[in-house]
Length: 326
Ligand code: NDP
Image (cartoon, rainbow, N blue to C red; front, side):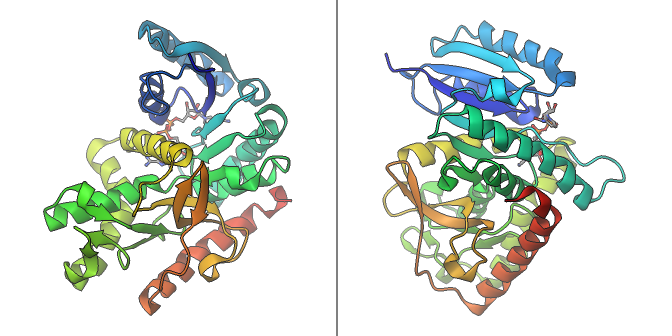
């Protein structure tokens, strides 16, 4: 039997976590021979709800679930963790502006970054899902100076999956026939879903679709998909977000398939003329649990304009939280 993996999940009584935790103990991330210790963090007001989730996890009688730690203290919850899913975040309340939301959540991620810095394994891989995810990840990373910066990421995998599925639906093919889609930038409506390098059945996607569909339907559909799901369901897209978080982490640990890449929000090193030090979604290939931003892709003027728009939004977000950055 393998040594148990310690996995932290924050906002553990929330909707996304509810869709994630049961898949973790079913072996969907690490396989069905890898025991897991869950470390669940919540705010004090949500601890009763979290206890209910803990009971349901126990009631699954999963042979993989080795133990559960629950706490409202991040220093306890993050002790010795190998992986951290930072999902909990305050939703925007009535009358609250994006700026206020940024500030409230910024404090949460600064505290959690500091706790990870002290308590987690030095190799901990941290994925931020709670919004505004890119900037929250930046704050967590800055507040964890003793951990490798490349072990912090934010999630654009749901946007990536949405783009793959929309393209497959339009082309009447399987998602297995789609490769090399890219989501650039922020996990927000300024994100740029790029098909310039995408392949459909091994051939360039842009030769097989109409430009008008790409620009006027595909891009806005992917950018606004989350809001439309909320409109229809009356609730946000928690299950597909949990699925994306799981897939993001699985690729990060076990690699991307040959001939393909995925989209992941990581610390910019200046690639593609993006300001270094921003958390920016790039195409990445992963091998031996380390990502590498795919280099030397040609960017058209159309693409460069959109990269600049999403970069500008991230620069503005960073200004709002500068007091929390080192
Ligand atoms: P969810 O579990 O549905 O969402 C959690 C976060 O994920 C939100 O910031 C949400 O952003 C974000 N998110 C990212 N991608 C998606 C997506 N595709 N679809 C939906 N959400 C997405 O929220 P709940 O309110 O159900 O649960 C949050 C939990 O976090 C609560 O139990 C609460 O107690 C806890 N919490 C913990 C805090 C802490 O750890 N200090 C602070 C505040 C809350 P968006 O809101 O923009 O949809």
